[in-house]
Amino acid sequence: MLEELSVPPDEEQTYRQLLSHPRVSVADLVAQQPQWSAERIEAVLRSLVELGLAVQTDQTGTAYAAISPDVAVAGLIRVRIEAARRAEYAVPELMAAFWRGRPAHSRDFVDVITDEHSITERWYQLQRAAQREVRGFDCPPYFVDPTDPDPMELERLAAGVSYRVIYAEEVLQAPGRWRDVEAGISAGEQARVMQRLPSKLTLFDDVAATLPLTGRPGSREAGSKAVIVVHRSPMLDALAALFEAYWDQAVPLVLDAQGVPTTGAPMASAEDAELIRLLAAGFGNDVIQRALGVSASTVQRRVHELMERLGAKTRFQAGLLLGRRGAASAGASLAPPSPIHSRGGPCNPA
Image (cartoon, rainbow, N blue to C red; front, side, top):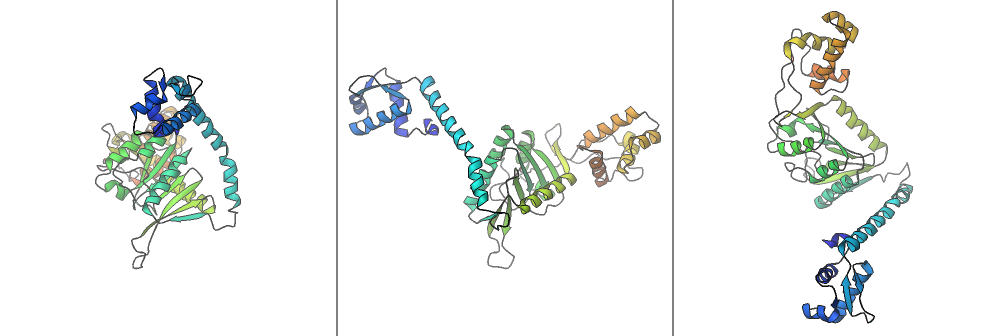
């Protein structure tokens, strides 16, 4: 347990022994642990004193007592926190040195990782370092089982990091993926769906991105797996812009009352048919008000309700979603969307 605070196993074991007695001598500990020499025990006891977990109780240095955990362990935690903060303060200086070695015209803003274990480790490292937002295109290939919920994503969501993920339609049609996407959305992930995505992609704040690199079909590298890590550069800016462009076009994915993923709640088909046609055509509230013969407040309320049911943030996005669903055809009503009975993953390692 105390190993998390950089307390070695021998020291923790001896500290636990000290806790059980008000005063313990070196000879007592030798008798309790005959496999340890007196020199080893004395070294461990000196280490406990330096860590603030024990104190000498006589002038000869042969008897020791444990300091109560609420004082000793709590103090050790504060020391480790302060050390971590000091290290954090050094990050800007270290990053400045990092970028000085990579001037704007440098080609060294891309790393290529070919070992699968290193790929997974690097991806989780970047995810742990994200402070604001993780964005991703979720589609094959995967280097870990995509049907399992990503514990790192759930942890970072709980820490306040935002996740925006766009799933390829093929991902949501694959068996065994529902548990993953349900866990992510339930924890706060913002999820959307597109019919196709250009590539797997994960963006970590505005600091780095990962992309898969596969061998060309028919070549010696065919089927090989590698990942490109892109650091701050015009390429990273372009990848971020690509994600935002797809995000604006993607259909929101939410959970219905039964916890089933769906692209929206059922619409009121007959009463909203005319409003849907006018809104999808791009008409403003004044035109819609005259066409429907209702008050301005009624138009605003009904448009707002319609946008909520669609999961749209703006009128323009609502029009795109309606057009995609074919709701603007003459006399058509907006049919309830079909639930997606499969599972999808948050951002799995690129």
